[in-house]
Length: 216
Image 1 (spheres, one colour):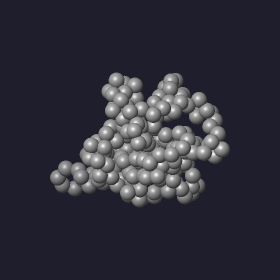
Image 2 (spheres, rainbow, N blue to C red; image 1 turned 135 degrees about the horizontal axis):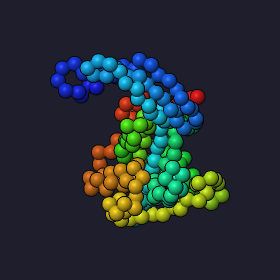
Image 3 (tube, one colour; image 1 turned 90 degrees about the vertical axis):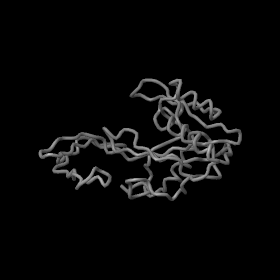
Image 4 (cartoon, rainbow, N blue to C red; image 1 turned 60 degrees about the vertical axis):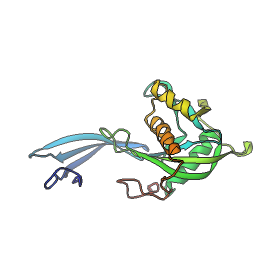
């Protein structure tokens, strides 16, 4: 793949000479690519090909952001995060995935949705992208229609935090989840612009062709 914003002259094309899939599960595939490098020769690059994710930066009428605290086995501890989830329902538009996750993890629906920020959280080892939506005009899901949480989600805690306090939590090291930290900081900037200039929910994800979960 050629980089269109590389330096002067013809940019190097990082052609894949060979690709091996070493492990596969519903969330990611471990891939090894042999890639043509600048100056001649090639090198092996191992990475995770990820299904992608979405999240909701949900802001209520009191300028509070909705956070969930959830256990993460790779770190062995609980993290403050945004309501978020994998793009794992075939054919589902990304904003509908975010709506579903907000309802399932925080028992909320939102009357207004905008694109807040797009992220590649770990580009050195994964192609994962995360689209964060800004969700406003919040209301509660009726008790008899709420999702029954299981596994780690059965243990999660939901909290509404003043947006400025959430920023302070980022700088105190209390929010370390990358998408949560980015979403909180982006929301503060967007608020300072009176929420203007946000992209519509149909805006394309940079570098991603399909805006819905792949079918199979």
